Image 1 (cartoon, rainbow, N blue to C red):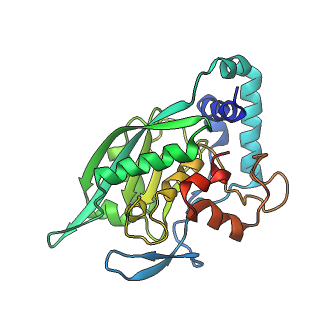
Image 2: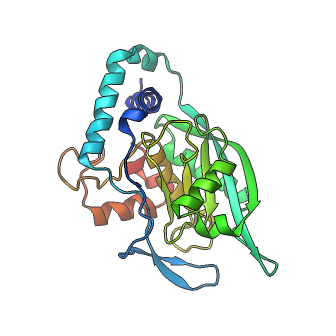
Image 3: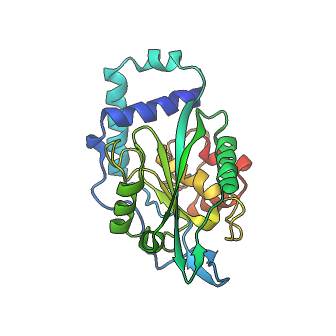
Length: 275
């Protein structure tokens, strides 16, 4: 049994077993930041400051709650037998929700079917041999200027997801729009009950493979945020102090080095999020 598949099964099944015990009390997303760490190119060619990822690092108390829940889950279920009987990776259907806006006949935010196919390839390449694979569940396309420009704001995000989400307990929903000054964000699986429509990934439309955001248009934003969706912390979680990101084969890293390595390099090399 591949150890990473065992961990994958543990994470996925445990969330369903004790969602309420580990829910996060405050908004776990950085909606605005006074300290941007990247430059994002806009549709008109101008450049603005932004953040690679809007996910806040969980506190030690939140991590302890997750660990307690996992231990209790393993204790109360025959997890060992379940993991031993698993064959192959867990396959996750992915629904893409492409939100655009139109002004004076000009459509902003369109993502082609070819880009979606390329994004699926990036995801599957990145997670190959790590316990998960991805299949295209479907694509929706919606023209809504408020959702497109406001999907980084909590209220607009919730309304958009409530309207578009497809069975979040059994599908990964990825929303393409313009999430403020972020490349993307997601929620950890213990943030809400598994049926909550807030689950999923929100990502900048131009960060798909072949998009217009230079240096961040190879599909790795989705790879990064799906890691959070599956329960992975940033590799620099806790800095160089134990237990770090709680993944044994990811070396301890200070924040500035690891955030660049995790997000900016091509998917085949993203070893730190495929653990």
